Length: 279
Image (tube, rainbow, N blue to C red):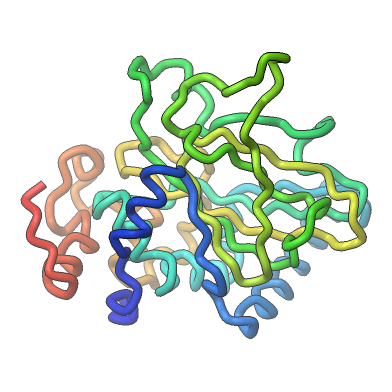
């Protein structure tokens, strides 16, 4: 639990930007010292995983459920410049339901067999089985960029601003996606995006290996997309981190009808951040 969160509460402008555009960028979210530490760990974990999978240096890597592999990844889980924005958008009944590290070397692509841009929304079957238009948000991601993606061709993330309110991909008269823009992120920047926004990864045509860490936050009643192998560390963490990593003091009902002990973040928000909401 970190009182430094109080210095970075979400602003009205940030709330409006995210609600209207479906994404926002927090520049210099993490200092360069932390970027360097996280990069060193990411490089080590990447090398170990590639050896395990039989991959070479030029192969790309998508690694799920990385958050429990080093303390530096836990540090980013509730980092002061980003985590208050997460609960400022989603509220207190939240968890980390998904984490993935994407390493894209030169001439590699972010997605298997990818050519060009692979436009999609996150969360798979949610997009087929939720009936409303627009669909509910339910989750968001925070992507921490460790490498320099401030120029085109560096496996940039692409988004279509405002498309989180559209169930179908917006296309032009030639049936091609329209309105897409490249995110130009510097090392240490954090990119927030709504799970509903139409977005895409892209090939790396540069000589810079693109390295990014994605943290997916959702409501606690949503089944995690990862195996969440954090049992070896969760007992040593503070109550809010335990909540974020899936703990429930009252069992299954604690995810759908939580009691105060299931969601310590709510108590912290009430005590420290002046949250008085009854819901």
